[in-house]
Image (cartoon, rainbow, N blue to C red; front, side):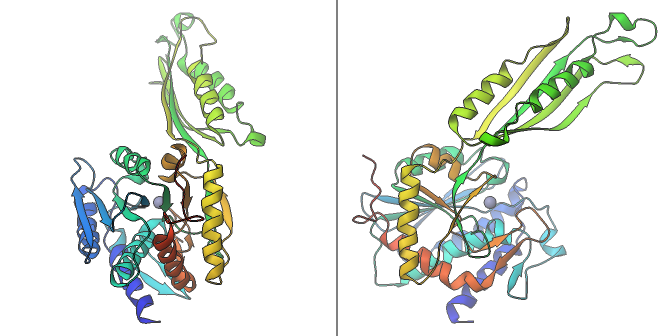
Amino acid sequence: LSGSDSELLQLLEELVNQDSPTTDKVSVDRLQDIVEARAGVPGTLVERLPVAGYGDHLRVGFGEGERQVLVLCHVDTVWPPGEAARRPFSVEDGRALGPGCSDMKGGVALALHVLGLIARSSRRPAARLCFLFTSDEEVGSPTSRALIEREASASEAVLVLESGFPPEGAVKTFRKGWGRYTVRVHGRASHAGADHAAGRSAIKELAQQVLGIESMTDYESGTTLNVGTIAGGSRVNVVPELAEAEVDVRVNSMEAARRMDAALRALRPHGEGLRVEVEGGFNRPPFERSAGVAALYETARGVARELGLELPEVPMGGASDGNFTAALGIPTLDGLGLVGEGAHALDEFVLLEHNESRVRLLEELLLRLGGEPPYSFRQP
Ligand SMILES: [Zn+2]
């Protein structure tokens, strides 16, 4: 390992070994203490943005100029408290392992490492850099979305440091939009033996609704509806008064998102004396591969080629904070973190052989983006 490589790896170890479940503010704040200290290199302006209920967010500014390039990282993970003690950071066969290593402590470590390199280098970035380290991405970014959208609106390009896709570290130029809905049916309870006819079964109605909802899936256009949970009824000898289902909706386009939202809100009961209630919406708009996204990708690919690297692209089904910024029309490139896979799974890993090239790629992008063409992405 070169000196730079081992520094990055040590940082990743430190981050992985500090638990940071989204729902545990104390742990996430402790992780943010590490990030805050590491980000405090000469020339940076580190702001801690206090959050109630979730961990604090950090905003790190570097350099100056009218133009801004935004880098997005989230520090929270899906892993429960104690997970890092159960399976601490380790390295096996060229892979780093441990909770959150790929999603996305690898990206956090890379951002901090490259920030340190840029701060120590004599080269100045073409635009001012803004790094956001947010605390609540894994639950849909309830407290960071407005901050992300505000900084993205002031930026000409957004880089998201979720992991690159193995084996080559492909970047993500498209992500599906994600909606979550609850469909609740209100019926009328009655005694299943003495007064069956007077009842209005919420379960029977919901069963019919489920078939209708699932039938809206259209693989051709990339729209899927999944009734993921269902609950209802009180006891076996009572006609059920209440039943509800949770629905996960994925779409490829804004137009499909609007259509599915309208279709779900238009659900009506099949039977008399029943009521259907629909709550929810699209938390993540689709991250479409717009002309701006394609141009940013081509520019990044050109930089990668200069470094002797291939930079393939890949579409993803899952959402990220890049969905918010791409939906605002800001050119966004995702998957620029370390190369890894297995998010939310026990076999999550980072492929260490790519670390050095990911460092060089991100450093070059941060130095050049926001400069003159082809590095300019100013909105018309
Ligand atoms: Zn993530």
